[in-house]
Structures are given as C-alpha cells and as structure tokens.
Amino acid sequence: MKVLVTGADGFVGRHLVPRLVSRGYQVVAGCRPDFSPVNTADRLTWEGVPLIPFELTDPDRIQAAVSPGQDIVIHLAAVSSVRDAREDPGRAWLVNAAGTSRLVNAVDAARRADRTNPLVLIISTAEVYGCGTARPRLETDVPRPQSTYAASKLGAEIAGLEVWRRTGLRVVVARPFTHTGPGQAAGFVVPSFIRRLLAIKSGDSPQVPTGNLDPIRDFLDVRDVVDAYLHLVEAGSPGEIYNVARGEGISLRDLFFRVAELIGVDAEPIPDPALVRSADIPHLVGNADKLRETTGWSPSTPLDQTLLDMLNAQTY
Image (cartoon, rainbow, N blue to C red):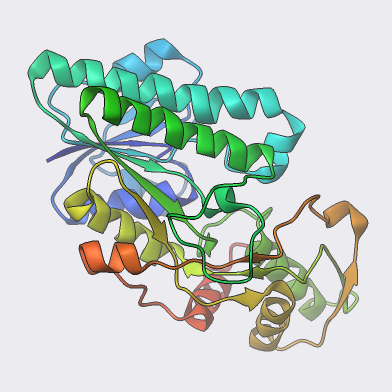
C-alpha cells in the first residue's frame, strides 16, 4: 500500500517512516524543503524512501505530494510548538488549519480522479481539550482550546471532518497526549530536563531553572504513539476521533525528580518566569478505551524505559 507521510522529517515522522517501511508500506516522505539527511541514523531512516519537498503554505507543493493511487495519508506536518504558535499566531492558523484544509481537499480531488478512497489520518493534539475536571478526558468532552496551537489544531480537525461529511473521504483524527522519546528537540519538557540535569553532573549548579512543575500530564513513548497510528490506519473508523493516551498522570515535578534520580544527581528546581507557559492546563490525562476497543492498541513502554532510552541516546 502507498502511504504519504507529511512532516516526515519531524520527531514523530522519523520514528514512523521506518516502521511503515518494515511493515511493507511504500512510503513517500513529505519533508521541509531544506531537509537533508546528514548523519548515519538519518540516512538509514530514509534509505530507499522518496523525499519530496512539502509545505502546507504552498498549494503547488501540496498538489505535487498528493497523487492518485495513494492508499493512506498520515498528516503530521504542523507548527507543533506552543511557543512558536503563540509568537506567530497567524502562521500557526495558516499552517495547521488552512494547510490541513488544502491537503484534505487535494486528497479528495485525487480520490475522485482515480475513483479510490484513501484514508487520511489527521494528527491533532490532546491540548484541544483545554482546562477541565481532573479526570481522564474522553473524545466526547467539549474542546476548549486555550492556546493558539491548540485552537489551530482543532481547526485542522474541523477542516478534515468537514470533508469527510461532505464527500465521504475517509478521515480519522488522532488526539495524542504528551509523548516523548529519543530524538525529541531540546525545547520540549523531557529533553530540557535531561539536558539541564546532565549539566549538573558536568559541574553546573544543582539549582535548575524550570517553568511551572505543578501540571499533571499523561506521558507516552513516541514509539507507542507510532504504533497507535499504525493501528488507526489499519482499523480506525472514518469520521471518528481517538485519544492516544496511557491513562496515567504524573506531575512535571515528579517527572523532574525521576529524571534526576536516573541520572544520579541531586537537583533543586528553581521557578523561572521566562519558562512559564501562560494559561497552562493543570491536568491533562486521557482515556484511550475507544482506541483500545476499536484496534486492540495499548502502550507497552514504561515511562522509566523511555527516559533511560533518551539518556542512552546521548543527544543532549
């Protein structure tokens, strides 16, 4: 089966593409125009996979990426940083919402041209739920996004599901909760903890500047998330939204000290206003019963194993 992966050069894409290849899919990887595999790991990831320049703000590149005969489109490309979206909200909406609309409509046009019906998996975010009661979120909960990033990703969901209702294109939406793993950029919470705590081992002060450590999050391993996406393209129902979650919460404070313990350092977190997110969600944990009952998926990687794998990757 032929698969187009948008945002294939991102954190999740670099884990997803080799998994697809190993399962026999014919993958085309939509990457940023300036992307080029530079190290051995990258070259192995992309060996034999066609790379095409892809930008959600460029209708011509979207049209070139979408072709008749594609069976699956996994849509990862996005402005994925809350900070980046806040600093340039117009671009976040243009990329995440309008770009998704362009893509899904282009896939539908190709579908009508060759009379097939590909499946489009839109990767959204659990942040669309916003604040709520301290219980695992359900897909039936009313979204209340409270960041530009979350609002623009909800716009992407709406754009995709509108096309499903109007044309019958098979659109499925995944709402992943917080995920991490080897290769994640240093600006995200777990890699930033690891980098700062490893610096203590190298002689830096044990006082570590942090943002708000009170929020509770549902952490998954990126490899389990990729596995969920594979389950969804094979068994997800069109028009449906699925949480991808472990169902267990941990405070960022407890996570900080767990990483410190694994590294073997004594550390003191010091609040830094520059690192605090405005309107942060206090509790974001998911219920993934719908995904589990539909596809049989469940996460298999303990959080400590994820953290150890990230430490062993030595990329910080």
